[in-house]
Length: 297
Image 1 (cartoon, rainbow, N blue to C red):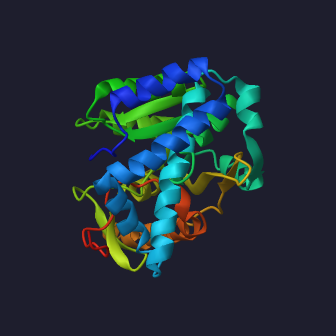
Image 2 (tube, rainbow, N blue to C red; image 1 turned 90 degrees about the horizontal axis):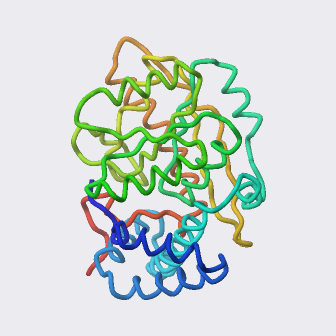
Image 3 (tube, rainbow, N blue to C red; image 1 turned 60 degrees about the horizontal axis):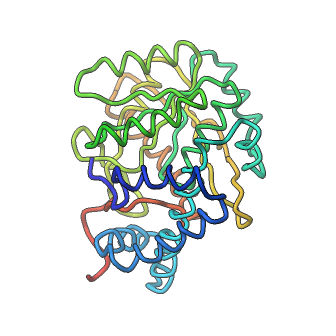
């Protein structure tokens, strides 16, 4: 998986070191300042964000303005993330202004076969995971194997401090067993699926053009009977967060596996489109989603 421009070991280490010393307000100032500089000097990342947003906005001014906001909001995201390691449960809960759809989540738990929680690189997905962990709700984060193991270890350590387990997708199939076992224990399995490589991916219409999505969530639901829920943790204007749990995505299954994958992935992607359109300046995809560019470099 191609890494984004800030997915480097020194960025994580510096962020955590600074977070131990300075208050959050100062961290956000640093994050915002660094983001503004990054927008100017990291041309590839800037063009990738602009190209992705050009599939949402027709107006080039809207594309450019929201692209700048993506960088700034990501700087704020990093500041909040760095501070998480020192937060207790009460402090984490204080970061949330509202939890939407808690009754939907409670209903999904009654199924007893686990929940696949689907999210995008939208808002603060790490904080969303920690909310469930600190609420004593068993949650497992599925993550791709990082090119730099040290980064993966840092992320997993931060999650582990707040009762969030990490399951890494490896080359061998044993990780799949861990996922199935978690669902059988009626736990949450959370995954981000809006950034996917061609290998084993399925082309689904996404904002009017085909993009690759993983068949895994549909295949897991098909084989285990688990519930599939969309959930997004996004930043409000006041700097706090809200978690929105969407309606249960009704899976349709038949004897045709390929048909099931396409039908159900289309349902999932339509939900993603609605939330991304609502919060385009918090869609942190610094790598290209589509091969075809709409932006001239």
